[in-house]
Length: 163
Image (cartoon, rainbow, N blue to C red; front, side):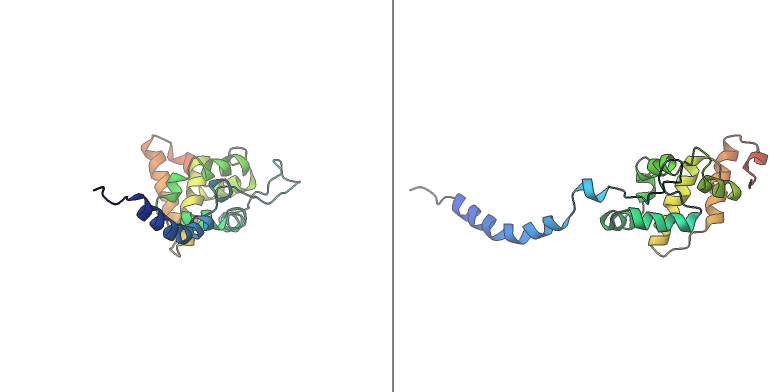
């Protein structure tokens, strides 16, 4: 006598589960949409993309240009600022012209932050904190970067705010 086949039971289970799982998968946007940025266009700006004037303006622009799915993922992961250093951080450094003396880089220079990697780090860390309703402690973040550069042997006079 042959044992009963598993295939009909498997097919029945699959038929019952697929309708329940299908809508859940359909609600997740593909990565090509989730990670797409749609910055504000500014034809008067050197790169044609709006450059925020300060940290609060950067938050507004990030809210505008990032997909809700990306923002939700970013908010939910405390390591998101580090994980996005070479993704969103690189995009900001290049498109917000942090290497080229934009008004946003000048804002950071006035705070005593001079390296574009540090600028994008402050933006990403602060954005995560803002999304999670936590204090930004901007002066504490600046002190952390200053301590790093002093440990590297940078002359402290080079870390003074320049406006």
